[in-house]
Picture 1 (cartoon, helix red, strand yellow):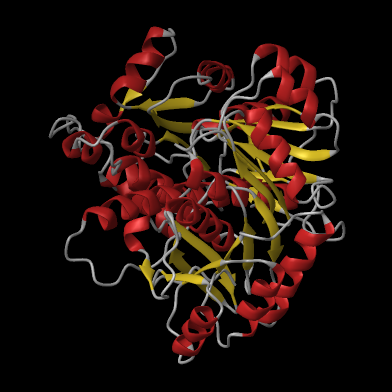
Picture 2: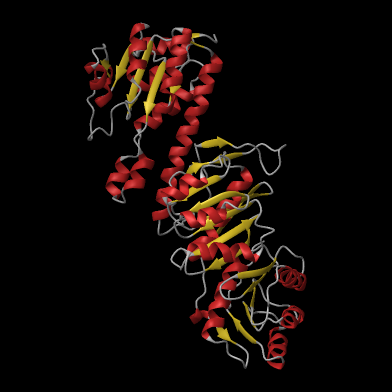
Length: 511
């Protein structure tokens, strides 16, 4: 029979917020209530009749509350199919039918976020609650399950609408949510144990995120898209339209780039399609913005902007002269924020920290691939000078700056830098020499003098041709990982043209 009428309910919850109207409605409908521990006391204090589970099982809560509901008189009433054989067994063992199970689990995930005390974390692994959820959801044809406080309001709405009746579709819908809750809960527990298992050899992959938000569309309007997760601990949106799929990808790239300059002097970056097209470090935020914009004022149109410092009013007025999609910063002076918010569609994001997850994942074929995020950042101590000409301190500083730029460009990637300003990029090309030509042409098109500039390559030079193209334009120093069979040929070319080259031994290829 599809339609079921509620006669009894077992309630065992951690969070009571929003529960009172549900309990009062169940009482109004004449539903017999069973409960445990703190929930039992809560219901009693409301003046609503309730039966303690201990009275049903004839066993007290034992082991500091670890065992309360784990008993045949509880699980028999939940798991019994409402058919002759099972109902006869219930009568024989004096087990009441339980038609509704309401559970809210111990807050394991929240506890994990606020403490690293193992005993406190372990005690928040719910055993009885998760068992009740699984049992009730398994028997959804006869039992209605509410698996979290998030569904108290949905339950109340149905109780008021149907006056204690539920359809098979209703119960199956709640059961699906119940398994969503239980699988997510188990995943977070697995992740905790995996992270502390010193003998782990097979990491496996469990991905669970119960928060999802619909996006306007995906990469293109005909594609649907969702964001799974919660960016609020990292970003606060101060104004503007909803972030799109493409916005989110660019914002992730922007934060990853600026994390390299989190503790540096004022730095500003402009990104387009995840690639930095403008980047500069200066003595003030305004100067950094001006230099970053000069790197490619054409590509900056509709870009993603990010600063490592608070935005002041003077900088805000300068930024406002171009069209952009998103502006990200650790903060905004009140007058700057008020000024920028005058354009309602422009997205302002306040960034709490330049931190992103240490692992990156993406779908591939019929599975997933994952890798460590590329947090490696070279310093002057990682550089090996391979040419007769040794770069001076100012050139080394620019080389390291350029190396970061190339790291965040799509391969094949070339970055041209002069005085801590990105002045030309070549990216996403099928040959390195084409990427070099693109970078040189870009720089020249915006009037930059390349004499004394430096060049970074995200991977080794397979031939000296890229070096030749760059040196003809005025580039005098190069940084690359090395490792090509043609390395010596490239070094010899540099020596014959009085060029400096350093190698890092680290490739930053971004496919």
